[in-house]
Each structure stands twice: as structure tokens, then as C-alpha cells.
Image 1 (spheres, helix red, strand yellow):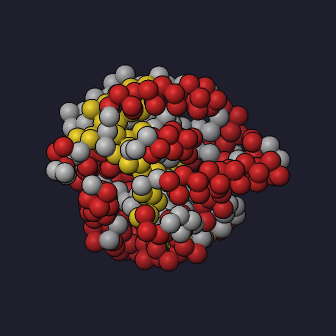
Image 2 (tube, helix red, strand yellow):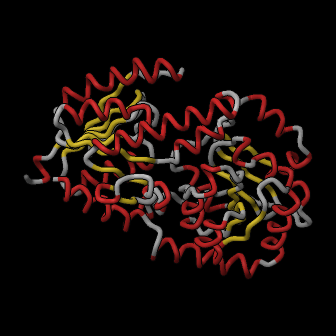
Image 3 (cartoon, helix red, strand yellow):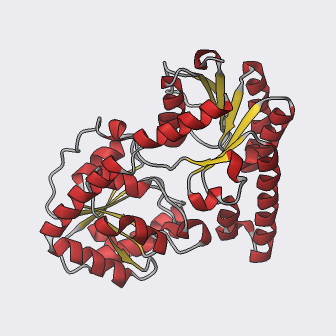
Length: 369
């Protein structure tokens, strides 16, 4: 079967249609390979694409309606497409994936996170015993799905190790260099060196400690924050910290604009707490920082040290004084910052770009076809 005659449909009830991994990386790469690609995702008023067919479903804010009514709406529209391969991205769609597989379709489950580990850290779900039970249920659901699905894609080797080796491939979440390079550096006047964090401003990502650290650095520096707040209560809590007077909140900027702000900064910081879902994670953010030439201060996870030691310093994410000391080390030695900046960009170009990972994705699809 020729690629031009193969219909591929990506499915999500959680992510936006312009999601970096789903749309910018996988959908566009598969379309460029010649597949006929569709994407079913929650409604976005301003989203359109000439490369793929976008099929909107109603955007539901509350979790239960999204998981029930949203999944059913997605299934109805997915069946109308009559795709050859269905590629879904949310664990809540495992049952939909199983239904499509039992209907004779080829189905790929793209595992973005260690979901059982993630569940164990979500305190809003209730006591630890309840979270452990829910994590066990998720583990079983993923195991059952993996036994039936045509293929599995994981973002890290640690996640991939949980699934059958003969049908699982690692497609890492590395940045699209060609996309990042299209955005120019933000033209802004800086009085001091800038430390930047871009992403969800959540407690578990150590935002509070970053603000405290910037308030105690010996050197003059400013902190820029980009992204949505976890909630209003946490935002107000952070605004009361001493370091807030040296912090500039830039808002939840449009996609791509954050690359311009990254290029205008001097140091990137990623300060995730040491919980199960973080210790072995390989988030997209440090690679985006590197592509923009930023040296980094990072949580002192052993896996992150193995990957990023040439371009980062490390600190305990829950100790602001350690974070401040690492920032001061970079702020005081501009030559080291410049050397790490050049090395960061070089590493992305040679090892950690989507331009290389898309070949893995393409080969995996060719085997399925």
C-alpha cells in the first residue's frame, strides 16, 4: 500500500490542535512523508491547517464530561473517517483505542507521560492509598491496551520498558529546530541578566522556590515567567514572596512567542520537584532552552545530570539557597555562560532535534503499513 493511500487519524480529547508533539511534530512529519493525515481535537476557533484535515470536537473543561461525552463524540467522528491507522494521545482514550482495534483497525498508543507515576503525585485525587489504587488501575489499563494495540510509542526509554519490546518504539520529545529558528529574538531592553522559566506555573514545578532564589542571588538579575498559573491562590502566594519584586510575569504568550523571549534571556531554569513522574522524565523544555542557546539551572536528578551536565548546573529543587548559588555561579562567569550557550545549541543540532526523531517515527509507520 502506498503512503498516499494510507489514512492516518490522530486523536485527543485533552490537547489543543496545535499541540507541539501531536501537530507540530508528528502530524506534520507524517503528512510530509505522504500520509493522508487527520486530527481530531477539541475545538479551537483560530486553528486551521493546509497540511492536514482538522476535525473539531466540543471543548469540555470539566474532566468527567470530557472523558465520557468527549470520548463518545470523538469516536463517532473517528469512525466516519475510516482511517487505516488511529494514533491516540490520552490515557482516557484507551477504551476507545481498544474498540477501534477490535473493529479491525491498526491502533497506536502514544504515551507522553508516566501516567501511573503522575497519578500518585496528584494530591487533589485524595489520600495516598486512593491514588495508589488509581495508579494500579491505570497500570492495568495500559497493560491490557498494550497487549492489543498494533504499536506503542513512548517519549522515554523508562516508559517504553513497561510495554512489549517488539511493538514499542521511543520517539523522544526533542524540539523542531526549523520551527524555533523561524522566531526572532524579542527586542527588549534589559537592565540586568535574565533568568527565564517557560511553562505551567505549578507548585510541583518549583516555581515558588525559583522566585525565592531570585530574591536572594548576590548578583543583579531578573526573573521572567511565561505560562498559565496553576490557580489564582498559588499566583497570589508567589506574589507575596520577597523575590517577586525582581520577577516579571509575561503572561501566557501565544505559541512560538515564547521562543522569542527565550532567545532574549540569559539563563533557563527548570526546577521540577523530585516526584516519580519527574525523576525519569525527559520534558521538552530543556531542549527548547538549549535550542535557544540558554545555559540552565536544573533539578539535581541523576538522569538529567547524565544528559545535561555540559550545559547546566544542578540544585535541590526544594532548596532555594542551592538554586540561588547555581544562578550566581552562572551570573558571575559570563565566559562560562557563553561557552555553555554554544555547547547547548551544538548538542541540539547534533543529537537532540526532532529532525532526527521524525526518522524514527517514519520507520515505525512504514513497518505498520
